[in-house]
Image (tube, rainbow over all chains, first blue to last red; front, side):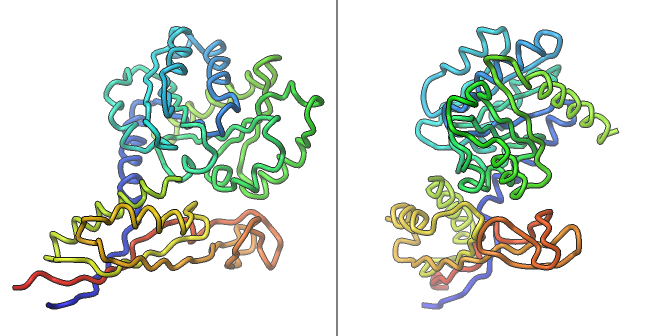
Length: 223
Length: 117
């Protein structure tokens, strides 16, 4: 019996990265800004999406992919606003992977301007999976506490923007907003930070404007 | 807990190697894991032990080398390694750094018995 040592040097996420790169190229060629929303469960991803829809729809064409372990409740909430939504139920998996998004690519209407992907609620695993998004956005709600950036650094490291949600609860729960910003920026100095409240509407317009700008830049970088 | 998904990717690569190199069974698998890869070594080992049953790697051992994070300071160009947050340049104290290594999980090599000629 002959034995052999075989050198491989292959990234275990290599196949995910390859599919993600194809998805990104496909959507960017169609001028679709794809945004991956990551956060722990209950931080307000779907609610933020509803507020963005109220501001941008129907003036802009939107589409949403919802990732959850079970139920299509989130997709139903988005469809109730008139925006097309696709639900991926992972049946237990704690994150979305590029191939799951890849299966839906052809169904997204080509005239779409913004495709929002709401990841499975989890601040850990989704950070390791590129979905082919052009913008990665991490959400952190006030009641989750101010110590999260350093406890879950990869999510903050790999995102380009941080949306602090439920700002209306400041004053009801102990929370040092300055500390959150400082810790998040220590991990990722390039992070753009937005402070929002779905109840008062604070910050939603500013964040939506940022999304519009990012989509314009998409066209410019290709031209 | 996405380690099972990573092990599934590992076996996709292994299956291709088994066919390519005419392997009868794999005896050892060497992985290199960045400290910031978001991988828990114990979970990876458990997932591997479950997944390998009944496969060409059922007797294989997993060797995991954990490597620190390597980065370059964007302000002064210094390169350094660290084992925890924040990534601070040891020379100019800037946190504006580019990560060079330590965020991936890589299959480095494997030891295998080959099929008889």
